[in-house]
Amino acid sequence: MRILITNDDGVYAPGLAALYKAMQKEHQVVIAAPQTEQSAVGHAITLSDPIRVRPLGPPEGYAGWAVSGTPADCVKLALSQLLDYTPDIVISGINKGSNTGFNLLYSGTVSAASEAALQGVPSIAISLDSHDPKADFSFAGRVACLIAAKLAQWNLPPTVPLNVNVPALPESEIRGFRFTSQSQTCFKERFIPRTDPRGNTYYWQAGETANDISTDRTDQSTVQAGYVSLTPVRLDLTHHKLLDSLRKFELSL
Image (cartoon, rainbow, N blue to C red; front, top):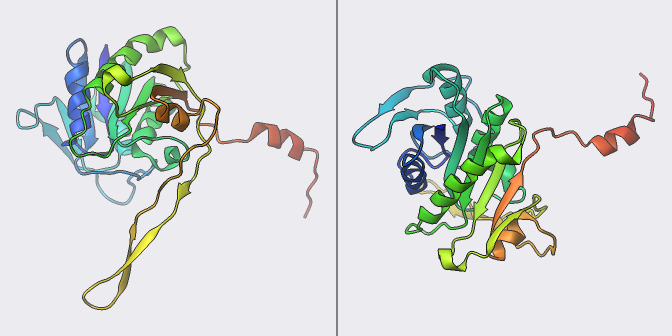
């Protein structure tokens, strides 16, 4: 397969290196990833500044481009300008830290996969549930290879990205794979106030995702239980059931 790889942790992220190494053994792989870390930028795109592109080469060990924009920019630019073909699949990751629950709204990793899906290209977002600087991404890389090979058999519409989260456990302790729903767990907000040398107050975001206590097969509870979570993501934000009930009401000026 011809595979486009991107991420939100930047071209020098170890998760990107592990994914590239795993996929390039059997596939034609090219990278279009942010030049610098773009975590939690969501589906932002660059409109008011030029997007600069730098070819990757021997120093990085990749084929592809470093892009000055967001993850969504990377996918847009690659599909419309940088590539002279449409890839068979776009894979975004491997992200440092899980992307479950409402984190999907903030995640640049998931948004890159969503951008590919918006353009009709099958896509996967994959994350490892660890922020450890020494985290081993190799098993998650093999998971990405397995899912990419199976994706066509599952008949997912190309407009539906698949969000994958891998527990940060030794392979022998992984209990299996589960198809899951998105957890409704919220982010527990916490900001740490500090004072700069001029006496001005500033804040560090220090919140974290609350534990999912659901007994259902949600993405977060599944990862916590030691399973790889696979969640098909719907990009249509319309609440269709509520819409039907609202249509009975009339409004007038």
